[in-house]
Length: 138
Image (cartoon, rainbow, N blue to C red; front, side):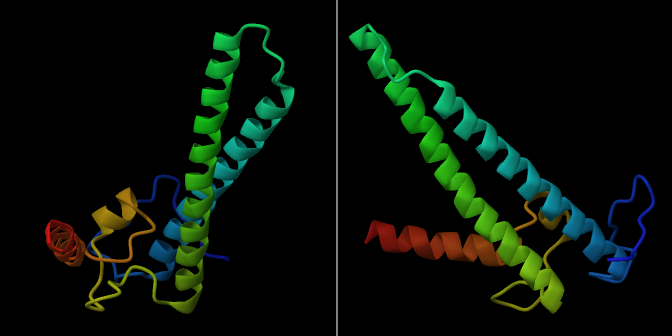
């Protein structure tokens, strides 16, 4: 994008929220996360292709099938995570990244750093989870 960041840059509350530096920091963080996930998925695919499907022992075959099933479920969850990362990158481009979808208020930098795909502030997320729990209890 053209914004340079100091080597050990970390967003702080002292800066303007979602300044060019903060936006670039989160853009890089999201892209790196996405890159890592895609690399892992590629490695899993290679691993699955290299594995022999013909295990002589039935217990070994069952164990291998269980491992493959687990790997595929993990990759499916990560595929969904990549979609959320791409959505966060889209919000960055639109200028809506970092703002709570329910309140419009800024999401804390600590929350975004820990969960860069967050779309709700901690308060809104807690309220959302309480509503979900009350629906499940009914």
